[in-house]
Image 1 (cartoon, rainbow, N blue to C red):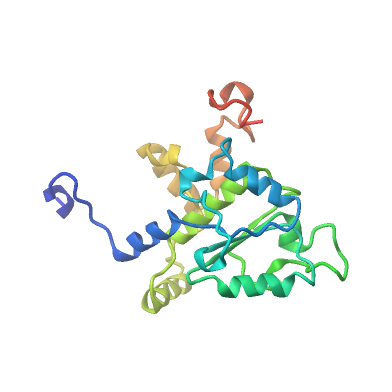
Image 2 (cartoon, rainbow, N blue to C red):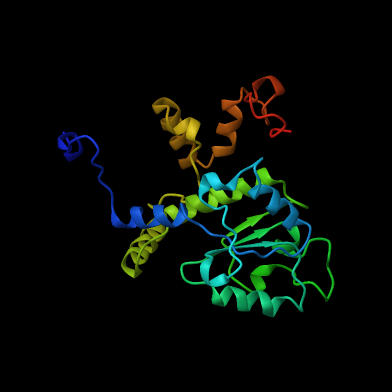
Length: 230
């Protein structure tokens, strides 16, 4: 019998690290920084059809001092690179960067002297999103994976050293594996997912959950979403 069973209703137990990371991931404010056609998809993600407001991210800040997430949406030219770095330096800590699209991630089709071959040459990148351009659903999936990464980030140098020792010993959990909410609520499916994650089989597990199909079939897709699944 644990301490949780003795607590009255409405009382939760957690750690400071989990609480701080939860507040950080639940209130990301992106910087207004669109460079090319990927920015159109980023704007669509914040509109009513996809509604980033459900994640507390509808406020795209015009000032980098009020933003903590830079979504690099589009190709970065050599002329724009120092501007991008200046905006990044003006963002307060903690801050994160999402490279949206193949141009921001690796230069894409623009393999020439005028385009930076990957924004990670200019700023550290926390999440890469492929596609040309990636759809709003892909951007939201990358944001959710970034939320998962933020939720499990170490708080303080001591915690960072503990995780580093755990990674060296091989006992650290894979923080980049996100459990779907439909699996999390089912104890049996959750146990099976954890076993698959330990074996590096999360992709195969998802296919098995769909009856062997690589994607959801039309008659298995959720209803009431209009064309959002197309």
